[in-house]
Amino acid sequence: MMQRVELEIDRLIKEIDYDEVTRLFKMLSGGKRLRAKLILKIAPEHEKAPLLAAIVELIHGASLLHDDVIDEALTRRGVSSVNATEGSKTAVMLGDVLYSKAFTELVSFEPEVARVVARSVTELSKGEMMDVKMADSFNFDEKKYLDMLYLKTATLIEAASIASALLVGKDSAKYGVYGRNLGLSFQIIDDILDITADAATMGKPTMHDFVEGKCTLPYIYLYEALNEEDRKRLQSSHAKSIDAAEVEWIKSKMGQHKTIEKSFKLARKLSSEAMNAVKDDEALVEILQTMIKRNY
Ligand code: FPP
Ligand code: MG
Image (cartoon, rainbow, N blue to C red; front, side, top):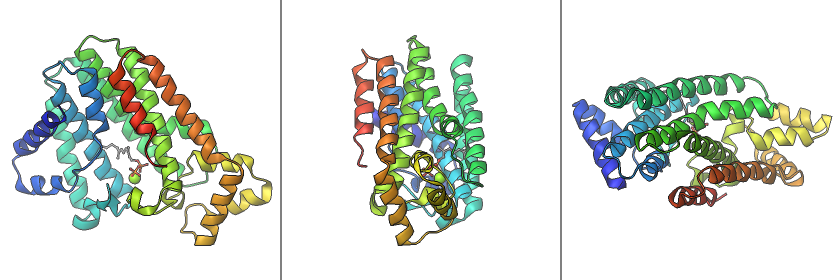
């Protein structure tokens, strides 16, 4: 089944009819294709499910290309990012091509399906803007952080679930709840992995988020738990490259206050809410379980 998505993606890229795009697109391959898998599991019998999945993966790919320029990331999916090897201008333009091709294809769907996907890209873009703005200062507001996460990561997954449910006449509200909570849970686990996994597994250095200015949940919970003096120390390390001793200090404080466990607990709670929304759909429960079991 997933091979049909890859064939659709290849077909769309070929239709763009520019060798340079084909060459550059190869640099992006190797993602988890989580969004595509969801669509195929929700609407396996629908003939346009592979096309919808390909569209969503192109949008996702475009957003990552732009995100890596914005974040000045040198790696993506364990290999050099397009901006690192080809320059930011090329990465932005490739993102534009993929994004507009995806929207051209989206027009062939029912307006309701097309609208839900299109609207989520506006939300995604708002989420990215918030993420960047929030990194300017130390954020310790959990709600503000989760609202941003929802927009940045969960909306496209939620839209993929709703759109595919609409295709086959399933209860789209239930599938929306599933996608939303899975997306949030996924991102929280990703944030945890940024702290706990080694650089090789993640394809980026440890605590990269905090160095970039991003106060993810384990840092927010840590701030809440620290005394005034330690809060100042944590804040003074924010958004700059920190030495090994400071990394160790933050990690030991996180251990002491169990902030990784606390974050993981929220991820698990969101996953079970996702699971409850689609209890009788075994394939979807399976996607959740594999996601939760990622190394951390
Ligand atoms: C990764 O976040 C970024 C996103 C999931 C969304 C990025 C969205 C945009 C750039 C706007 C939409 C643009 C287009 C062209 C559709 P991260 O930096 O936290 O994660 P990372 O560690 O994977 O980089
Ligand atoms: Mg990024």
